[in-house]
Length: 194
Ligand code: SF4
Image 1 (cartoon, rainbow, N blue to C red):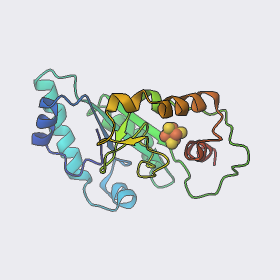
Image 2 (image 1 turned 90 degrees about the vertical axis):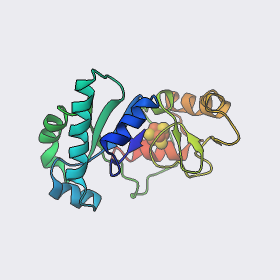
Image 3 (image 1 turned 30 degrees about the vertical axis):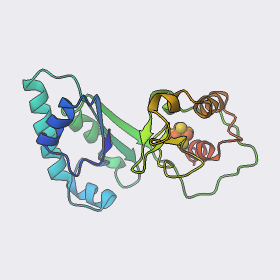
């Protein structure tokens, strides 16, 4: 499950754990409330950290490995000075701490030759189900686009979607680095070079 953690409480965490959640991925982008406010625009940092501390304590007391907690930062000019402190601080509260590169979705990229040496593992690793049931193989934010998601939850099962021809074509294109039929992935990868 991906979340910004705004509504995370220890009680909700316990319920999710009882339901069998395996991974909880929280995007935080900062290790101080000042920077968090600049990046996220809401004064929620201290509440989220308090919940994460409660969860870490609960997991330790109950000897729980799952749900694995991952806390991530997208590194930008605004938060890059907190990078090392972010890793150090959240390593105490999460099994995985990740610093991700910013993907430039604004600058126009040349789409004449949509091949790339960059690779992406997401379609082999995860599936995202959007609020309207859109099932796609990544969490990059294109999920609501009709030509990006694979099917709707109401019309196809998760395993059918995971094994569908469309999913296999996407994986093959990403494996080859030839994205002529997948402009979203090409722009996503090309944006990492900017
Ligand atoms: S849009 Fe494509 S390249 Fe970008 S993260 Fe998703 S699967 Fe990977």
